[in-house]
Each structure stands twice: as structure tokens, then as C-alpha cells.
Image: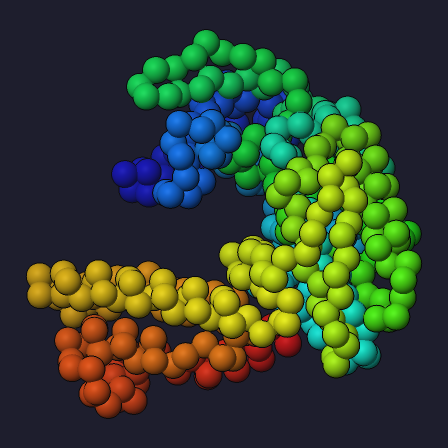
Length: 396
């Protein structure tokens, strides 16, 4: 409907957007959010409030206004080279996959140089909700944002309110004095700018780092014979913890994970790291931006998980195959199965072609050992190895 009447609506929407930008004022009605709670994973306990993620639902017009500002702010940061090169979140030509590639390439390079590496995944508690508005506005000013543009951001952050909806009931409005809305267009970009100075703290200790929004990965490579590595890592984490406290952010030691990647052919090392009076022991595997990483960089656990997930989906889709058309099945398989094969496959060369072959046979309702080359050609699906080569070339 909106597309049909868009020629009549556009002049009014344009006037509202331009009026906000030129005046440096965001209408109060745009700053009211309705918060809903979404269970992070289906298997989690629904009676535990910590298993939910709060998402702010904002008005349609406010999101259009935020998108316009987000595009202009992104262009300004890009043109003036103000983006953190180690931040992959919400930047053109960047994604979770480029973030993972950057990290794995550094780890492979260290291993080739016979260096051991420590990979630390920092976890923040309610990161978006605790952003200090004064600190954020000061950061924006330091990036050269001033005048009406700065006033617009000050107006955007000031006077925000929210109501929580739960089981058909809605709470009374409450004022929001900190944080950026999780579910907004601008929130993730503003959070990335808010944590811009964290990189300097990390680099001062000789660490590499890479971020995707509030997911931060620290990398420290050292000779296997170095006995001071544990103390250096703890010192870096202590400074990061102090920076977090100064910026009203809170590290969550219980969810912070540690992988030790030994230098080939060095034996595995056992480091225990101190963080906020808690001890963090190394794990064999850790989940990172949707990919399971292991301390040998084999990604065998991730391949197993993806294979199991895809086979489970194919089994369930096959049960309803008789009542759906070939076209409908193709769309279903493409969205649920092939998308899983494509996600972060640029460094998963070991992923089995058998899953894609099984998906093609399912679309055409053919038996298990049917030849799949003509099927893939008909579906316009590149084989997995070719899909990986294509993505690698595209990224390069």
C-alpha cells in the first residue's frame, strides 16, 4: 500500500526529514520506543530474564530519519578516514565474514612464524544500554561533528523514553537517560564510535584486535618459550577493564572465552588469565560470530555443526515435500540450507559437497544416488568449492 501511494507521501516525508536535519531537532514522538523481549535461543529457560534480548520498536518515520543520518554520517567518516580499520560492524564492504577472515589470517600468519597466539573473546553486559550520552557527544565532537549536526545528535539522545510490552500488557513510560536503542538504525554505528578509543588501549600492549559492533576479539602472538605472556595478557585486560569502567561499560568474565593456538609444531600451552578477580581458563572451542572456532584452526567442529544442522533441515523439509511445488521447495532449501553453506564458507574449504547434493536431490524429489551435476546446473547453484572460490575472489 505504501509503495502504491508513495508519490503522494514522499513530499510530506521529505519535508519532515529535512526540517529535522536543518533545525537540529528530533521530534519527541520519534524518541518513544516500545520494548519487546525476544528469547535469545529456543532452548533457553523462558523463566530466566537474562535469557531474553530487549529490542526497541520505533516508528517508521523515525527509522527513515535515522537511515538518512546514518548514510550521511557513514559517508563523512569514510571520506575523512575516521573509521577504525579494525571495526567491521555496519561498514560498506564489511561483514561478520570479513571480521572472521581478518582474525584467522592473523592467527595463520603467527603460526607460520612459529609463534603461539591467544585469542580472547570479550563479552559485554547490556552494552548498548549503558552508553553515556555526554561521553558519546564528546566523542562525536572530537571527530569533527559540530554545529547543527552535533545539535541533532544531542536532540536525538535527549528525552528518549520507552515502554515494555510483555504478555499483552504495557508498562508506564520511563525516561531513558543512558544507552542507544537496540533495534534502531543509528544505535550500532554510534556504539562503534563510542568504543573508538578502546583500540589505542589494546594496541599499547602489543595486541591486535578486531571488532564487530560490541563483539571484540583480542589477539596476542608470542614465542612459545615466552614465560611472561600470561602477565602481559592480564595487564592488557586490566587496562581494558579500567577503560570499560570509565565508559560505563561492564565486562562479563563468566562469558569471556579464551583460545590458545600453539605455534606449529609447538606443544599446546596452558595459560590461565586473570580478569576482574576471575580466572579464565582456555577452551578447546569457542563460538565466534556464528562460527565455532577451535584451537587448531581446523574448523572441524564448525563443519560438523553445519552438516548436522543442514541434514536436520533437509530431513524436515523432505517430510513436507509431497505437498509443495518444485519452485516452493527450491525457495525453502535455498533460504534454509544453502544460506548455511554460504555463511562464512570462505575459510571452510572442508565443508562437504554432500549436503548441497542432498539439497538438490530433495528439490527435484530424486533418489539418494542420482547424479547431481545437471541438477546444480539447472538450479544455478555453484558447487560448494566454486562458491568458496567465488567468495574468496570477491573479497580479494
